[in-house]
Length: 203
Image (cartoon, rainbow, N blue to C red; front, top):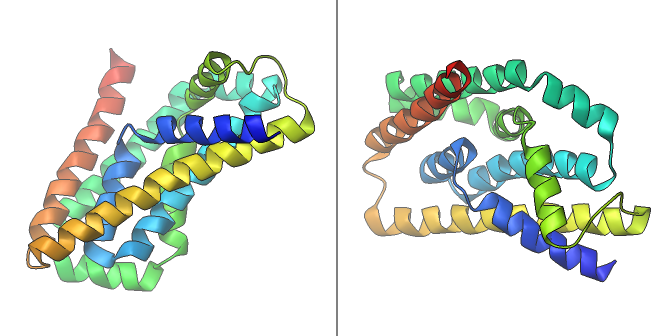
């Protein structure tokens, strides 16, 4: 079990490194609202990744087949959510964003990143490839699969914690005078990510 757990941590770290839409959200929220906001945002993504890792580790083909069969619709929902969040960051004033975050701190940050993470069914295939690459083939036993999934969760969350800590460190050095500008920058990044999802599906 220990071997599966350690390989799961490594897979989680490698899986989290590509900074996509959730990465931009984590950076923006850490920059605007602090370290805890970044951790909550990353937690939502880690839980979503963990669920897909469960599907891959335990060979739940009925679920994976259903999700992959409907991944176009699911991806459209995720792309639309990213696009909306990006546009809202661009057009809203800093004060409005801060007020909204204070009212919805915690659950909303977690749920929004979870929603984006869970609307990427292709993650199942990525996990299956990673498991195969690290010599984990076939359906894992209960203990081995549990260790693997726990490792994946810890690995991804280590990455989000490091990313949030880096954003906090940069914020302290640069000061907090550029919240509005940074929100627009991150909003633009999220808008691009959302647009790419739609363009990729169209092409």
